[in-house]
Length: 340
Image (cartoon, rainbow, N blue to C red):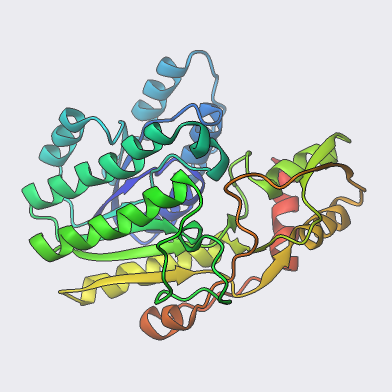
């Protein structure tokens, strides 16, 4: 099969593409190498996902990405330096390939930045996603998997969070764009018969994790004996999900979508294990054999108090079965960090 993966040079996307290629599929990767973090990280992710162990000499962003495109192209893989807001550029890609399924992972990420740049988040996460659905309709593509987020639950008082819970009270623009994507996705499913799964990811971590996320940031700062920003009293908690389990959930969703028609599903992908901020930090300290220097700060606007995934639906519907507990996951992450 031929898959179009948006955001395929990012953290989750590069791991997914690596798996799809190993299974013998063809992949079209669309990524705009946004300046949210250093584009060089995405180039390294891309090369790793393709199994290319080469020395890459960096110079200028545009030249580097074009060089990456040229050395990565093969019979089963094509990379496009493309923004999903650009309809003309997207149309050329859809015209050039026979696409069987889209896995849409691209987004402007981050709760706190979305409060500062809400209109840009709407442009990318809502309008950009709608552009993809418009081309699905135009080019008769009927299979679509979309990355949603646990942030849609806001400060949900019911624990654990279930797909049937009311999610009408998001507390950040980022969360609101993800909820909008779920609603609009159902519109395109209803109007045009696009079979769709919306996956609510719960705080994904592991090798290649984005450097702005807490586990990666804390690990780097502690290893460099620098002060870490520690928000609140350490009691905020997350359902941290290891990258291998997320990829397994995506692949199982792909298999389910291949076999079914007339479906629209929302599915939680979490670890079903809640870890506090203090516990997370202690685990990193233990694996680094270092003590963090904490800078205590107030809780940030838009941050939820706790996330916890009810994964019964994922287990029953797609056979999802997360296998990496937090202690082992942090151990694997720190080992990767120290050798990268």
